[in-house]
Image (cartoon, rainbow, N blue to C red; front, side):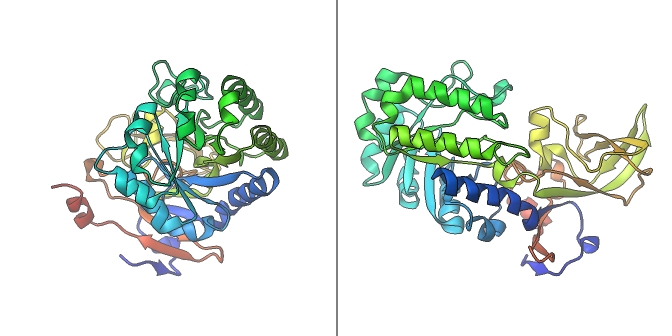
Length: 375
């Protein structure tokens, strides 16, 4: 449906994602500061956040997008603009021409992919993903440096043999890393391991997962380290934030449908973690609510048939009852890009709060959308 403006939160049917442009601004201003002080270019990682209805604001502060598939490449080109970087764990033969047609740079995950497709890239700048063997991830499922990882090349001699065929490298080994000291130690390791290769290319992307918009992060020291890296190897540095660009900007607005007691007080809401915040299930995490304080404790549960469909346990200042609203915090990254129709649960609408404060209902989803997603 078409967007509607001036809508009150009271008459928008839950569930819906509420993206607050005013809450996006602190992240975007930090990104602008990093670009100005360090000289790095900053690309939005579409794998984390691809809700293009707020790209009008984000493109003012960022240089473009980076992708993980053909569809993300096309979305970045059509809806964001700026530089469009194309990466995939593996490109298919039938899609490579369309990828090249929509990208400014293409990054291959392996030497095999480089050798297979380099001849079909024309004058497009080509890169190769490196795997330094260390990462910031403490969760095996998300660790790009896990044993037998398929994510990037690690053998220096094999890489050196093809370095004359590439213009840059991509290194993504940070995952939700808000520890500048750890970032710096890993970058030291990268410089030591790949230094003679880094000085032969024009650009290096250090990927995403660096939580430099976190409260208290030493942003000036981070910028100085990026600048030193750039100057040492004579390269243009790129960053690819996803979560760091959108953190604390979005809520998932839900309504209590039922309450019951089964050893704990439970509140069932009109949403589902498997359908609407899948990473909570994958990484065994709890959602956040604010202020999460008060004498009444509830386990907030989703409405799907999955027994473990639980947002978490939270404290409230009053007893919950059907019709009460709850705002699930930090619901931008890896949510809308992963939402699904499990159980046919109503897909959350997308709502934007503009900088002037008015709400804009961007999209509602209907039974017809559910129907068309199947066959």
